Amino acid sequence: MAFAGISAQKPEETAGNAGGAAAARAGWFVTFALCLGYATFAILLNSVGTAILQSTGYFHVDNRAASTLEAFKDITIAVASFTLASHLPRFGIRRSMVAALLIAGLGCVAVPLGDSFWAMRLMFFATGLGFALMKVAVYSSVGLLTGSASGHARLLGIIESGFMAAVVSSSWIFAAFIDPTDPSSPSWLNTYWLLAGLCLVAALAAAFVRIDERGLVAKPEGDAAAPRAFPAMLALLRLRLTQVFIAAIFLYVLIEQGVGTWLPTINHRVLGLDGQIAVQAASAFAMSIALGRLVAGLLVTRVGWFPLMLGCLAGMAAILLAVPGMVGTDAHALVTSWRDIPLPALLLPAIGFFMAPIYPTLNSVILSSVPKARQPGLIGLIVVFSALGGTTGSRIVAELFSAIPDARVLYSLLVPIALLAAGVIVLKRLAEEGVSVD
Image (cartoon, rainbow, N blue to C red):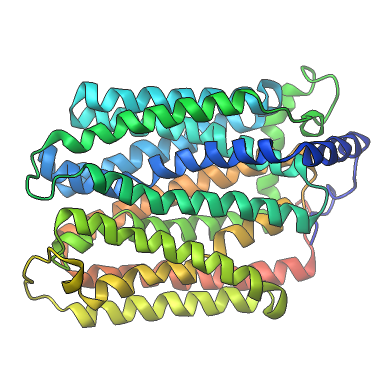
């Protein structure tokens, strides 16, 4: 599957491939640095569910105010990606990663020092800005370090697996600092000192990364090409395949964040788990995604990406239909032990198993079809619409959860699942027909 009009390999891309092969031979430290930096942001980004739960108890804000943490993160990601992605080749991958991690580290330091809800918002703003730089840098690096679609998918899978492992650890790291007997305890804020240190270590590792970045530059004169970088990114939106792909990414992230962000709160307020267990149990969602991606990697070559996608969407819908009926609307006694955890608290996170293949498969198929010089712009669009989808999903669930404070709120996510299924069907048809620039 290729983009008509941009699939021919340019001489500078050949040089980039050669540099990528050399970098791949250099190898393990670059992969380690990419994984560490990306995983650091996984912990920070996916702490938003915990931060929402803790903010409602510690800072005494309501659901709507707490949901703005997602917006501070995702809207910042969207704006920064939209304005900065096309200029990354000039700034450089290594400098982008170092800057991203230092910005996030400063945001972490602000939380325990500020000890306020506004400090939390500042931290997620810094995290969003940093992640916009980091994701474009990491995804662009994958294109430079690999020379084939299979190699691209394999390295991207390794990095995304590290991301999901960090997501799992995020819940347990925060849970270790939460005092389950005293919601007013500030001990959970100390988590951010640990994360600030991790940002510093990852920044030091990124500072020593060496990647041949010539394949990212469409023209060797650099400065002359720079003014055209942003319009070139926007021109990708003229591709019908890109339009459908971006819509699918938006819907997927809307569903994922709608579930993942509010899962600790649902565990606590709907399923009756105490604060610490609610956060720990939410890590099963990330574990399910990690397991699902492993299994999907074994299945996709046998069944094909399209049947796999539709099967996964059907599995997601089945779980969302089943859980509310199992929970009901009655009050539950507070669960303080893992021995007493209810079945819905284990079943709901299993939706991540079916979500798992969707995002990386869509990204890998599209990115491996685009010349390396075009990838930063396309990645920027992916990050923009992923961020908008995350904010939208979190806000929708926040509003509905305020109006329907029980498990029936999950039914609302069946609508974007149906729309995503339609998008995947259209995407397959466009891919088979081929695409052209309108």
